[in-house]
Length: 526
Image (tube, rainbow, N blue to C red; front, side, top):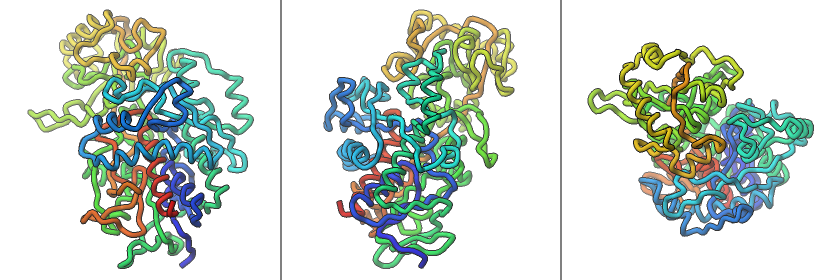
């Protein structure tokens, strides 16, 4: 045996770092093993915001919350989940946020983003999401040496991007960006991971990357350690926080309900947590679900793996719609769970009902907003189709010109009045928050000005939701519903408590942080 620790944590995203910090502050000796050469996994390339109901920063926005309303909202927007686990999350999340601030350089700030269903019972129109203020990298090193490359420089906060209207033509605050770059300050996912790394280092966590957990040491007494390529490590407890299985093509194809084939996460989540949990006899749940998202073609990761990009502008802003092969709209494009529509099946054929699909926009959109990653003055990528007329565009896409013309005509007639009677786009606080506040309607605008452009909208995901079932402390359960001694799970390594859709931006990271904190606190006896 090459090493020994009270607690071994597998994975360095939000869940793993939160677990390691909680366990170390609780007095345990902690060894965190990251399998890749980069810290932070998917968290480090994300927006970094966390959904934390009843958090202590909500008062900054003048918003009040309470446990009962948060639980009402969560239970009202999930299916097939255990109420006790939802309660554990709602109780733990605000305590986690205070703990992280107390034991790291992280300072959270409240965000104006609404819940996905703010109008539902218990919903809130702002405040439940929090994000980190800029964090200095300091002795951690340079961001490009620490993390997977982000989709954009992480020097502005989400709230700054929204407030400046950068998606809808606002000017970059170049002076502020230069100051933060010069001072090694990062935000978003990099800021969250950096702050947690600082906290873990100060608490005495031993951090090692390039060391995947390849197996569990098991006995009649439970899990007693891990195997790595360099030897075995004994432990009193193991926390699995090494992500889901979206980059294992066979697992994804065999388990996910729907064609969610385009992950945006770094190419490291290949099902290790599911395999390790199964080895120990864990019960598994929600393997068919994912944190789904519409994506566009994008670029590639350093190893050549395709890297799709999240579709944001092309679903929230005016003068754009989505259509399927039948030439029809099929969902409220601006809704947070729009990608769930890709799992729909045509009962007549058994084939996906809404794939392929395209985002179609006109020149009014193109003059103001980004399309397929290209801003108005930039050339469009090759995979974008362009035509001077809608019939010509339809012919190029293989869509019935008549069907597309009818769809656009019907949409235009109502969009000009600020209405979408078919799907209700723009009627919720979530929709409007992501739109253009300077437009006649933040989400709706007719498609009338040529040329017209079309971009494939692909079924993507930021992670999978299936994994080991856990109890309210994050301890993994077996098929008889009994805790497996010494084994815990958090983040996308566990069966998600939220689903099958999502309830808010930041729900993935809020869940990861909270269940990591619960598991880390439990293994330290706190």
